[in-house]
Length: 52
Image 1 (cartoon, rainbow, N blue to C red):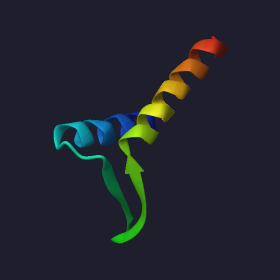
Image 2: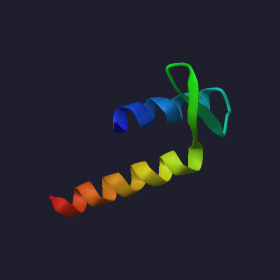
Image 3: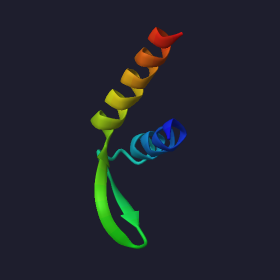
Image 4: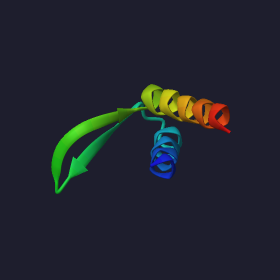
């Protein structure tokens, strides 16, 4: 999942966007925003370091 979020973050940065639409079978199921992705990735990294 982190790889997908890294890809999403790269798209946001490359196209200077703050949100991406999340679609499933052509239907809108949610949004991803830059701040939430960064927060998740930072927390994930911190927790990973603490568990080692």
